[in-house]
Length: 408
Image (cartoon, rainbow, N blue to C red; front, side, top):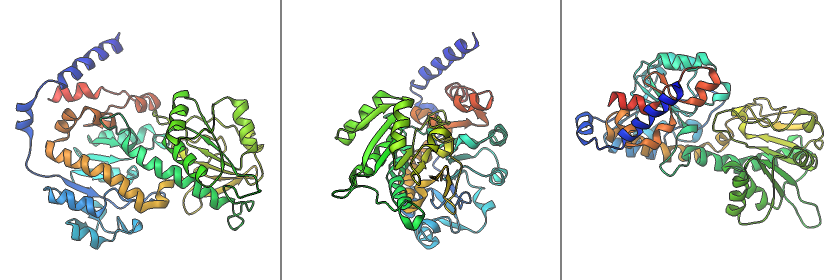
């Protein structure tokens, strides 16, 4: 009964959001730009930065301030001088950056960074729900902030723009990583990924037919490997094959067929992304134990828990481990290997969002004018609004449409 009432009120809120609110928006609009803080990333050797100098320049030229912590872009080869010339203010303490109205990060904030939030701010970052506890989410809620997650941010045409951009990079990079790990110099069995005349090609199994899987398949096919793609969605498999424009082996996740394919595989890529924040473990330890000696597993969705039962979180400093004589690569931020390219991909989505936000005046107005952006919000003014997080961590969640309508 409660769910029915909640759904009914939510529908009313959505209908109300479609009504003209010119007078309201005019009243709350502000000519004062945003103050945007970009802290230096500190976790898991994250080399990306959320905003590039060119995007900073665009934001500043449109009346906003950007505060950048010194060295934030260094790993992506964007020195402080590039940012200062673009109009950014260089801050020499993390505490100073976290006083900004909007905090834009790549990785989720650490517990020490959460303590620096002063409340009523907007946080834009990844969330990586698989390794987050209820106390972590509650600590964000207690700050009364509004938080937007990269993973859930949706555009008007229904795609996840940041997930898609980073997935393209991650999928292509996964094949480069696998190629390195197959070589003798990196402890592999001394094979070249792909194929040459007279020698059977490398066999690559890809689990997941979303964007990561598609671009991994493109890269593997490009070097001449034999590719097999598995997914639990027939429609995703059809779309991948149509996008690639070639006929290749595809199958639903039938255990016997998957196990047989993995038994013959030289490389296995795990990229079965789940919107709810927790990936499906579809490959058992027993199956991994029967894979070829020194074959390679690249588990791209390790930040959601991983596709392989044997997967364990690794870092760029120590990216691999061997279990059952199979090389495992389980770095959650694989796109950070191409940190400059990935930074441009992030910035290309975040800069227009921030410009729209500054024109709207407040986050409330922005979300009112952009219903599709609400999907990215998981905390709104201290209230949890993401049902997947609420269900997983047993925290009561509220409907964001109702919250926005109530404050309109």
